[in-house]
Image (cartoon, rainbow, N blue to C red; front, side, top):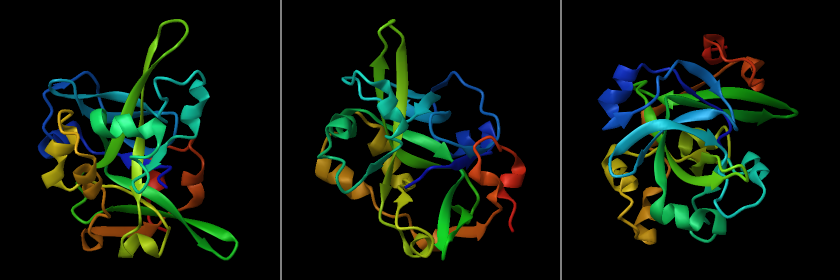
Length: 220
């Protein structure tokens, strides 16, 4: 799974990596982003639009918005079968912006937090799905989930799942809502090349989402 990540990159660094036509947000450095919080996304609504969505997908048809607390991830292997994700895979895909993420390695009875990032230390995009839910009061809430897959060689020594990091050649296709071939979309959802990634142990400071400081990513 993916339950915590960082986005400390500047807007200039993000704009250098992604095509953004419109943005209505200012991104401040974040070191310990947690479920139910706002996350920076890019989705296509006729243009590549950067904004904030709430992390934890609430399907438009549900009557219980608390379901979003449990739907922070979507498994790539079953994504086209699940009612909560099937339509979103076809029509509502997004980029969830990050530059690192955390997994916890179990060693005997302990869980050791590990920070994982790209060797080039550039921002990247998780493959995401989004939906909007209308509250009884008429408020529209936009939410999203991160797609996960089997781990690559690096992550396999830490955890049995990893988030799908989109390779650059697939980003435009992923954002195109007119493209709806489930088989080819599913083929994009593969582990990122392990040789392009790095990881190191960090302190248990990251265990609490209340801690959101540069110390979260300090190497132990």
